[in-house]
Length: 338
Ligand SMILES: Cc1cc2nc3c(=O)[nH]c(=O)nc-3n(C[C@H](O)[C@H](O)[C@H](O)COP(=O)(O)OP(=O)(O)OC[C@H]3O[C@@H](n4cnc5c(N)ncnc54)[C@H](O)[C@@H]3O)c2cc1C
Image (cartoon, rainbow, N blue to C red; front, side):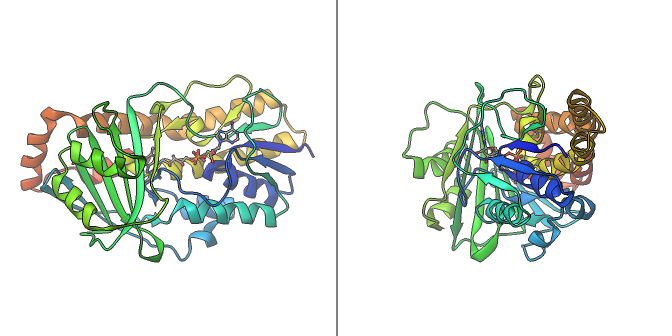
């Protein structure tokens, strides 16, 4: 059998490695950082099916995590109403989940090198799962864990002037606070205070007061900037999965699900390659085609909804529709997941 090399040990790379080891394929994974570590992520996994988790062989790792189902939306201080997700989400820190996935991959005989950054060199048998590409972008993502703060529902979503922020309870009493903000050169603060400064700058005053009164988890504040949402430009000769292939706007809570789905969709083509049943270019093509069929529509829908959510003109109609309980939460949910 031919071996598979994976660049990037986030959800996409680690879960793919696990699934391939279960098929008896040799896997070597190179991760630029080390485990465990805090990452910028809302840590709210919505949309992934039982079937995908079973196919990857990781369903037991999510068996005991929080399963929020109620989402409450605000525009500034205005309550827009709440929505019951058709299927409960999973809420778990990446600090815990990524480390567990890495342990699982090693237990199954996969080789994981930490603190090893790979170059995007097209090489047969190499899967690029290295996440967001460094590009000039207009966004900054910020995340921290807090406690001693009461949540109104499983997930709180707050729309600010040029931002949205989600709050969700994860393990051990911690609450994930994570936002996507339009970069603003006027916001200057120490790294540990950047999230609160962006929340204030985006006129989320009530939320800022709650956060200022909460207890913040040491070293959990992380930031990421310099990336572009949507489909990423393809890398010649490399099979890309997860954020390396496409980045869905985070308000959907679907990016991690997409990373897991992409890994599951890549299993069969990679098995055929490993078993000498097809060559590498056909394998890359299969993986690209599968990803296009699965994600093209939801990426378009999510991009359009994000524009609407963040447009100034849409705020007043949104509040009016909310008063009549006419906001199409259900449509927003299903169109960004299929
Ligand atoms: C602000 C924000 C909030 C979000 N909130 C949510 C949410 O609530 N729910 C949700 O489902 N999704 C959310 N997402 C998206 C989610 O985090 C990503 O979709 C998901 O992490 C993608 O997984 P991945 O494995 O493709 O990439 P990553 O998790 O980014 O993993 C990529 C890995 O590759 C490593 N790496 C990078 N370069 C190299 C290299 N050259 N060589 C080797 N390794 C390398 C990195 O260190 C990293 O570990 C959010 C994103 C942002 C920005």
